[in-house]
Image (cartoon, rainbow, N blue to C red; front, side, top):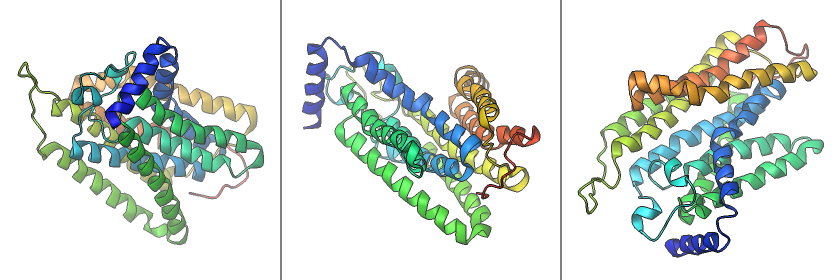
Length: 322
């Protein structure tokens, strides 16, 4: 049934000569490369707690997704059925196993968290609606491009909803028990370490194709797992540093503050293309991606907020500390 649905979409793509393919590729790319910039900007400039809510939800999804992917080890649709021909260059960007969709569990918490934040103010509710609509659009784009089945994206959407819900409950609990946060961060870091150990030592399918080559090389599939789990590890380290020694407040300082935060986003955009390859070359794919993700999260959670505090460009109005 799932393959038939993908074949239906594939026939539709062919009938319109891939007219929608570039847009769907853009949606997928935007979800994984640029959507996080909204959450980071919101964290720096507008609402520290709201930004943390979005980034915590995202970090949780980043740990859960590779654990499920590397446990289920579901092959991509074109491996399961040779009739599936992914559109455009999506086959080169669709790394890892298929279930669940990593693009959807990236877009879901980032867009969903921003939707929750923006819904609080009447004049930004239209933006909230746009963020909500972007989630199913991202999920559908993965089906449309032929790189994920419906169950891949449906489970990813469920993970997103659970992550946003559990993060809200967690924040409510920490409001009452703020002294427990360090213990919670420690537990999360230990869980990440155990997750890395699990995906490293667990057995993987070693099925060969007709030419005697592995259908999927598990070593390559673990690369994304190390990188994704590293995002949560980096968040935990940075959050501890920020809450203990930095304690910045969101800027909320007019156009000057907006400009400062936009400048701060430039390294976030450039790091993936220019800094990650250096670390991968130096430490290998697994550890290079892990170290990059830790540094990447540390930059936007702690390092640039430290700069914001040092230059004194934040509002005199006291924000609630997150």
